[in-house]
Image (tube, rainbow, N blue to C red; front, side, top):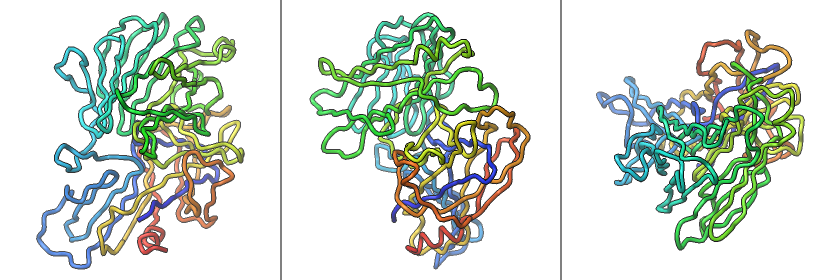
Length: 414
């Protein structure tokens, strides 16, 4: 069954919600269904043999089923081909070469205990990519949960990585205006393997291993944000950082630069966060779009949030896409809801946004799209599927929209 799309569109909205499965709560589409021949006295709870990469199914006490479909991966295949939950926690390897690695996923990200040559090793699809940071000190690593930090590889600069279900989020924290504005990383590709790189329309760089059509790695377009957006406020991305990839002596050279004038501006509030991200075999279909800029592509901000609503410069539409093929065959859908997780953040504006109340609408998208689509290429039904009213506060919670009729139509092929 093909992917289906929903748009979360603003009425008077000033909310930003986490939806990136790689680095936050995953957007969910819980669907309740009843089998045509349900049997009594069967075990209840999750059915491991019904798992897919993006979905889990549970049997309810009344014999019905609930399938939760995520926009990103929540399971990976183990060595026996069975789907297992993804666990991004960094665990000790007991190995002197690479001290830490993510616990369970289709890819592995391994880190050395000190920065140095090839300090990061990414293994995906049986191939190994190695990353180095040129000119850095042998900074020592500290680990907490799924985050690893290297303190001061350069004076006034900290480097950290957050490992998630779909990749590795890299952050350079710049403590003062005297830090370097240019950082050079190198990526060593797998031996005896053709790897090609191309720049996408959204400014990201994609690494391909022909004849595979989809990229194996994607380096997202970077953005820098200063500490002026404190607390729960999330700033709009600015064109204040650049990323360029070239090939030299069999390796890929990654030049990451933060705009010097922006960094040295008297308006800067330090520390500054410089956030490129490495996505691994990406298949996520979510993004937010600037509704007032027809030629802009989709965005993900540096923290993995999808924006919904107004900033000082834009109004933003969030879009999420789901694959419904994991719904059991011959199911009768009794209810379906779209869920996005709100964790207390809002889009930074001139006016404070805490405590205000807003309405958020859900609409069905009516044309194929991807995160690299331009705003002017998007199409959605103006009919409101469902709406909710929420207050921007510190009450972290799931927000849900009833999309039962739409899910029923999609499942029926309408």
